[in-house]
Amino acid sequence: MLPTQSGGPGTFARLDLTRVQTPCYVVDEEKIRSNLLILREIGDRSGARFLLALKAFSMWALAPLVKDYLDGCCASGLWEARLARDKEFVSRSKDQVLSTFAPAYRQNELEEICALSDHLIFNQPSAYGVEIARKAGCSVGLRINPELSLGLDPKYDPCAENSRLGYPLSRLKEAELSGFDGLHFHTLCEQSFAPLLQTWKKVEKNLGALLHHFKWINLGGGHHCTRGDYERDELVHLISEISNRYNVQVYLEPGEAVALDAGVLVGEVLDVIPGEKSHALLDLSATCHAPDVIEAPYRPALLGEVEHGGHEYHLGGASCLTADSFGTYRLPHKLNRGDHLAFLDQAHYTMVKTNTFNGVRLPSIVLWNSKTDQLSVVKEFGYEEFVNRLS
Ligand SMILES: Cc1ncc(COP(=O)(O)O)c(C=O)c1O
View 1 (spheres, rainbow, N blue to C red):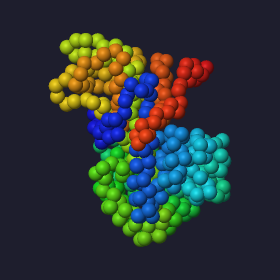
View 2: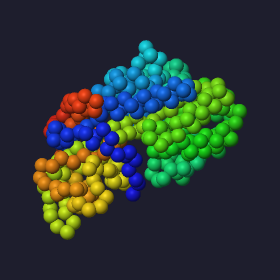
View 3: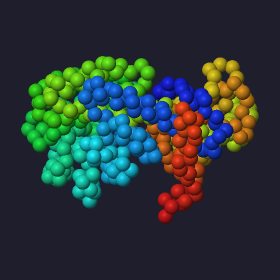
View 4: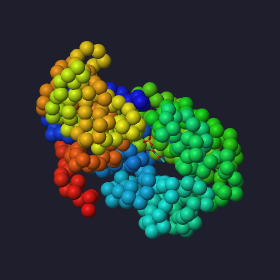
């Protein structure tokens, strides 16, 4: 079981949960802004350019805000690249960058991906499409696998044994770099500065002077730079050193750091099954609304939970899956039908992963401004979202 990375309720301690209809995600635009500001400051001090990884957080109602602070986006393929342009996460007039990486590209999509992307990153030197992208005018990059496992869990470790992600550093030959403008590696997940430094040192030791070959180096995502204890001065120092030593533009593409602690998932207690271990049955589902709870697995923090005393409940999900549970929680008061509960740190890797298994309702998306306390429903979902995907 992985630990939650939530830094606590923050501004959400002030949110009146009875004001929203459940299920819903509530995203605090001020918290997103303060995360973006931290990234902007690191960028300004170090010269790095920050791209939002859309796979983690794609709430396009906030695209204008993201565009104001960051230098573009990174996409995982055609549809995210289209989203980035259609919803204006990336502005051509501000010299922002859309960088796309997929392990492999479909032949019938490549032309459009090239037209949308500024950077196109390939998984191996002989990947299908390298020549096409170059001719189309994209700045072409190679993703390497630094072969250094520093993560908590092999499931989230692109350097894990037999990984398909990135060309193994030990196999890379000088001749294979010809025609590549950029180097990319992504190996971290919710990590501090030390693993990045270790990874960089390995890449630098192995590639040495070959690093002068590149115009840009993309250090991927997984940097928890907006967490309170992240070593930002060290990061600024490393980025400045890389850019000066090799005369390259450094990019980082965090997803989670942009939306860290910026959203909650609010649900209602539909019923309580009393017993030695009571169950509270929610209109939320871990498997449909926060799949990482089961996939990782991890136990999300709950607003108002206590460590000792109070009343203990299994918080059960709305689907028929036996394992559809958020876990066991203690609350200072007894739960009753109609009570609202909020799981913390639910803005990233949730909305982008929802599904309607069992016909479970999708959470609506609500924007909250913690400074003005204004709430607005951005999007509600109905039966159509369920039925339209089934035939
Ligand atoms: C290639 C790549 N870049 C960036 C990211 C974003 O990572 P994170 O959200 O952990 O910062 C991911 C996440 O899986 C990724 O695969």
